[in-house]
Amino acid sequence: METGLPFNRNMWIRAFYTFNPEEAGYVGWTNQSGQARALRELNDGDLMLIYGASTFQTKKALRSHILGFVQIESRPIRDYEKASEASLLAKKDSGHSDSWTYALPVRRAWHAIDKFPIERIAPETYDSAAGQGIGVWGQPLTQDEIATALKIKVRAANVFGEKPIHEDDSVVLSFKEVFSPSKAFPGSSGERTARHTDGETFLYLLEFTGDTAALTGRQQSLGDKKVAFKVGVSNDPKTRTDQINAGFPPAVPGRWKVALHASFENRKAAEAAETAFKNRALKLESLGGEFFLGSRADATLVWASIPGVSRFS
Image (cartoon, rainbow, N blue to C red; front, side):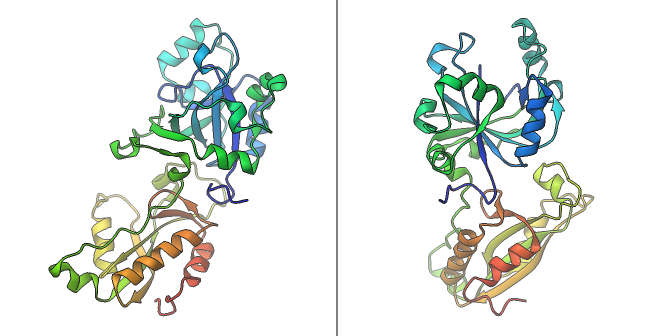
């Protein structure tokens, strides 16, 4: 079934005593074998649903309840590489200095607003009798469970070692909406703008020509040929691209360029084509809004499937 996650993404469950990505930007294992298994089975961008461990070290009201979600990078680190001094000191004071030291970095995190019990979200995967093993090692959710988890209301959280989130990203929304491409921005109405919005309008696809890993804040892996794309509509794609690139300092290498564009009779038709691209971009990873990550071949195939783009250049 369709879960709502980006193409090829997975979701695991893990148990934590507490959920504090603002101070501890990693997911850790006490034994290196746990980290090794995660590196074998998890990819960059995969998710973990974090719930409260059923132990006295977890606040009673949070035990076995959903605490939040994290998005990981599949790269081995040690805990001290992505933790604040306060977090490491708290581990030491609680007698856990040697615990969860083999880690994977967390890139994004969300606090759960809905505090549902884990049994309700993962009735097949979670087994209270094996709760400790699942909590320690982690376990992948079924497709049905992922679809249920994505309905949970969340709020984005800051992650230690990552750039602070924008204020606009701190709104409460269902977790599925975090990974859903935005709708095409509607054209303005009124006598003056009607002459522009009702005339020829272009659907465009921009490609980033610089360091995609740096742009997306990810580790560059050997042989990775993924490219960042932006889809949108404009009555002048070149001018729009120049406006977007104006946000980069002159000394920074890499700019957006128009990779593909197609002409439509009016803005409404172009916006419909933009929405069609977003809905069909299943093999591209949504980076939020109108931004995607993937191969040029996959992006071109999606583009070619949109009705009315036969005149692209």
